[in-house]
Amino acid sequence: MSVTDPAASSRLASDLDILPARAIGALLALALSSCSEKPQQAAAPAAPPVTVAQPTRRTVTDWDEYTGRFEAVEEVQVRARVGGYVNSVEFRDGAMVKTGDLLYVIDPRPFEAVATQADGQLADARAKVELAKRELDRALTLTLNQTVTEAVVDQRRQALQAAHAAETQADGALKAAQLNVEFTHVVAPITGRVSRHLVTPGNLVQGSDAGTSTLLTTIVSVDPIYIYFDVDEATYLKNNRLWFEGKRPSSRDTPNPVEVALSGETKPSHDGKMDFLDNRLDLSTGTLRSRAVIPNKDLSILPGQFGRVRLIGSAPYEALLLPDTAVATDQSRKIVFVVKEDDTVEGRPVVLGPLDDGLRVIREGLKAEDRVIVDGLQRARVGAKVSPHPAAAPSGGKAGDKPGDKP
Image (cartoon, rainbow, N blue to C red; front, side):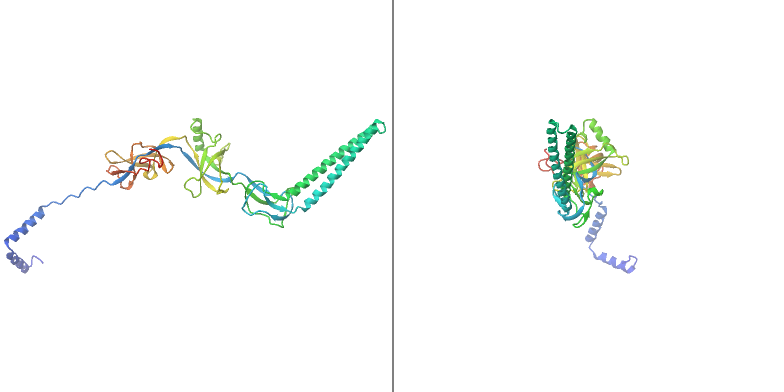
């Protein structure tokens, strides 16, 4: 309704005339009181809750990590030692075999025939030796009666020596023939896992006498197993310095422990020990070839697999540790949020070390009595107040202790 309307103004005036004077006064008082009231100030927000814990203190050892490849301790190429036709294959492809297990049978009949011939030649040579002995003895007897001359005795003695030489040759020929018969049965030279058969029955194979023997299969040992990895020059110098200072034993003289995690594993699943360090650094890569030996009782590791190797990199030392989630990144710095005595938040730059059993080693920047925010970092602001609550303590320890540690 427009106030400039004359008709409306007259009607409003008539309505006000109708109202009692007491009601008009009440309305005016209410309007004046509402105009005099001031707006209430908003209540200050409560300090956000955060979870705090003191750093865990315990003795730790640094570990250096490398990528390595597993290789067999023993690897053999099984080749034919005699030529001939293959009669049978006596193993299952990919099976475990033991030393002496039969793998192939090559037709032995030609070699048995040669062995029989060599046996006859040996018997003939022995008979000639016996005859030469008797003739020499007869000549020596007749020499006493001066029936034969010394020249005849010398001839008989030389004939005996020649008979002995022929016997030795025949004996060697028989042994060689017998070895060839034995070589027709190809056996496993080591215990391990055999590959597939590369020659099927009915095929002709060449032996070692032919210059290039036929490859029949391969065998690799699987327990224990080697893992080879390369140590960079900086790490080698660090470990060498620790050895000179007496803080870490050298892997050349001491089988230092190693831990190995297979591909896809987040934690090490196999333990082993150092076994070898090369005598020089590789000129092309500047690394030192190293080797550890790993027990493989369950045969779960095969040569050729990759693994992550952890090797001790320091002497045991006392360290402060925090959950990795308590560490934030501020551009190029790593910081943690510490709650001071007045419950305000302070950002503290820290120097990080390696992970140890799920906790991060803090090398510099923290004290054992500091209260560090481990949960609720997104609610904390540097300089602002927070409402700190201690982290739940594991059974048998205080907040921040590793589960199972004594308080």
